Length: 232
Image (tube, rainbow, N blue to C red):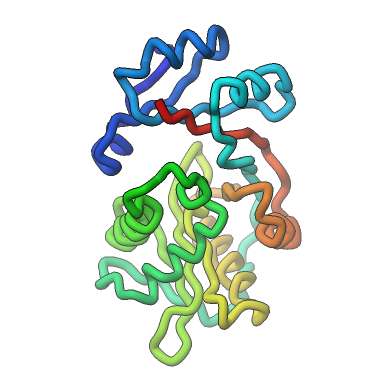
């Protein structure tokens, strides 16, 4: 595997060269040799590797995410109990959907990292929901509506031979009413319909509310990794 891989989608979207680094040796040399090749490099590190984490910090790496992946295995059928969730596809993405997508990214590394200066976070999450509704990034988009506005949102795709929750958001004004639980239960039902038994979701370890919620819904920790950004 090459030590740094060009991320073509990120490069095109952000307008500057972005790569992901896989080499775990000679970090300082690797970064120095690529100053003219990349503007931004992502690097994922085992949180238990104290030496490598320290090396990242010494070389001006910005720890932007403690990324945790949850998994729920062997989903049972008939989990949604006919709740009031809806499926949507190929409809116009209105401001309510975009707002929910942006709310879902409260702990996103693209929001936390202050080195982003061109409204990248909002553009990224707006693009994410648009391409989920049109079917490019998601197989199912599940929503809850109140008074003709969308107040809950979950996007469901397929990754690593499991279904995968991409965006999950409940509008600030409607939290604490069980909407998130209804969305998750419907995602279990749609997972079964898609022919899968396991479902994964990625969130941030610092997002205690989300982590506790997924545990309550029967998810277990699969793995955790630190994500660094190197701005060259």
